[in-house]
Image (cartoon, rainbow, N blue to C red; front, side, top):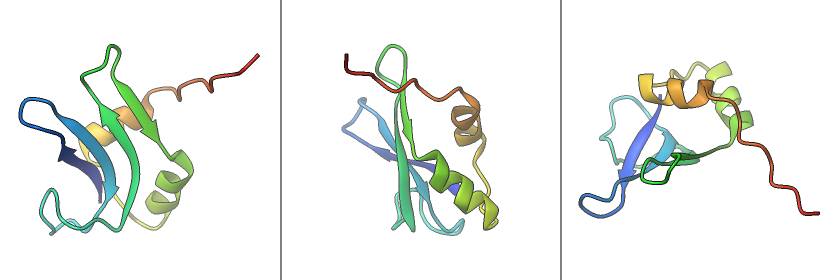
Length: 82
């Protein structure tokens, strides 16, 4: 399953997007960390390795509802240095 694992201090949430077995605890040992999500920035920051998410989905991993919504957002444009 691909879901969020909560990090950060109390009242300062920051999340990792992880591939983890469904039966494991929310913050249990993941198979792979595929991104991060910070809802405290304006707008919220999502960094995701989309190629790795696609790989795990092709292997049968299911996304949680929240990760599915984050994945459906358009990818952030790459910052160009001019």
